Image (cartoon, rainbow, N blue to C red; front, side):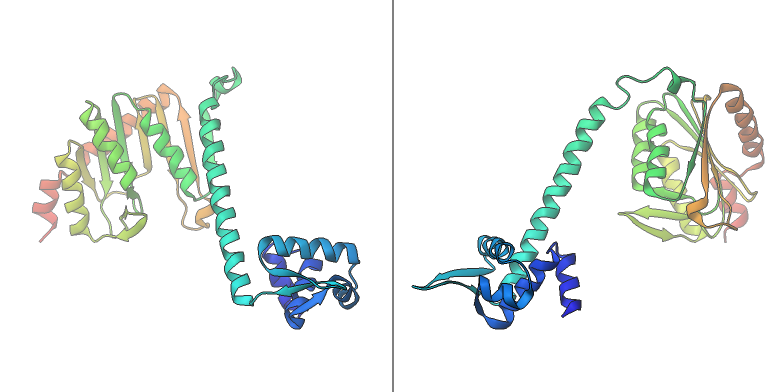
Length: 283
């Protein structure tokens, strides 16, 4: 029975409530005093718990001439009621999270401190969707140009693709060098899919048709994005350590951005257009 009590506790029952419920289920119908005797729980506490069970529909209160008794309903029905309570509570919690997030978003950096304006370098650790969102957040602030150097295992997501379409449509310029390899992945509908070289080229041709300027390289690239020649986002990937220990660096410095644009141009000159790559390397 201890195991059953532990499981009930995980369903938000207090230990004494679980004991009372079990005794009532075993007997079918009992008085508060009898349950108190069996569970060693104070009669007043038992009575409060039974009143709670009655209000939730777990048992019925049966009054006789001499004593009030409590009659349990079938466990299957109790289980159904508990399930509905948990689902309702879960939905309420999710709604509360959404509501408070909206309210917090309204005041996010509304009174930005002077100190935050001097933060020129940020280090972001971990491998999670919120780290990816930081990258998307920076891209959405781009005004004119974005330079991508994309190396192995880079994920092209639906959100990133949608952003690129809007940015290009509004007159922005995207120049990208993709490192060709077997580990390129595309994320569609929150599912990550590995692609072979021909599929990669086909996907990149689609980006090119949308207006992105693209070259591919067989050289090892750093995973680097330069935004408006002012902000640099670098992914520091190290396969020798767990992915959750990897880091990204954001540098807000025009000189650093210029130096990396020069590096980008060096790789650009030594890379292949998609037409050249298909003609010389794909059969």
